[in-house]
Image (cartoon, rainbow, N blue to C red; front, side, top):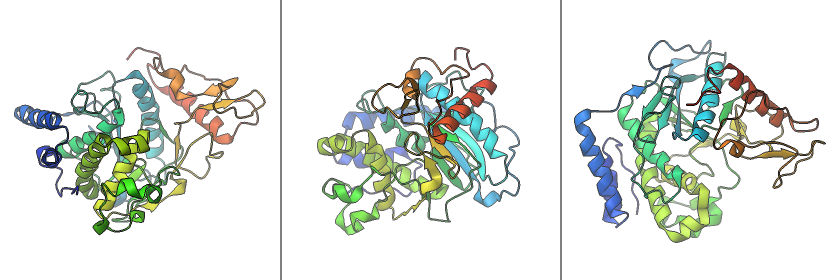
Length: 364
């Protein structure tokens, strides 16, 4: 049985749980050594300019008790950097508008060293997992990054929004959580009841039915900081256990870490309010007028007649994977007539951000 810890303050305590069941013995010893070797230097400082160092402007009428800190995990890869810059640009635009409960912002950089965006985006550098521990699944660093951030950062807000670089805020985001009930986006492909046999390895029967596990990932989620401090070490624990288990790894693939967060939350008895309007994902969602976030994880491929050609490179396309080694150029061509409004809005917002971000075309 995997048990979450009440305190995220000591990485070694939850890692010992993993060691006790024989998981990655050398890896966890290394993590423990990292914690001790850095203790003489004290916590790493929050690096970078922006909102952390001075006065932060908020939307008119914003209730301080409802403000949430925006946190996204990222790497120093150029692909992650350009998405983070666009995401931060739109955060700054929406934070000051009426109806926003958005507070401070942190990019949690889990590459282990500063990068070229430290002066542009408020950033905390944390350590990645030891080499090879993620087994090529880079997202496995996310829960470990949050554990470190919660230990080291001085977070003034009582709530946290866990976000990702490929999120764009399309309108001011209020706090959708209700006290101890966090808010989350329901993903159609996270199906706990369809995977009961596998999930029982990590969610024992005494914890209740598998339906207690919400159909969510960790992002987007607005949650109380105190709740996340309890959940994060368990999330880390479950993620590593799932990745080690061959059957689970094969079944869940790239959404394994999402299942791990859902399980960890349920182990702590935390139920999320499912908010379908939290986010849309073009091209499958056609309109953006009733949402807060555009998540551009899918490629958008269309013919010049405005017909979707998903799975086949279109005559017109926008796909973030087209820009693995260089950022998208300024002034991308707009989609042809007939393409859903959400796709057109996405490209327009990317264009506005790149037009206004200083040094967009400069090498980072």
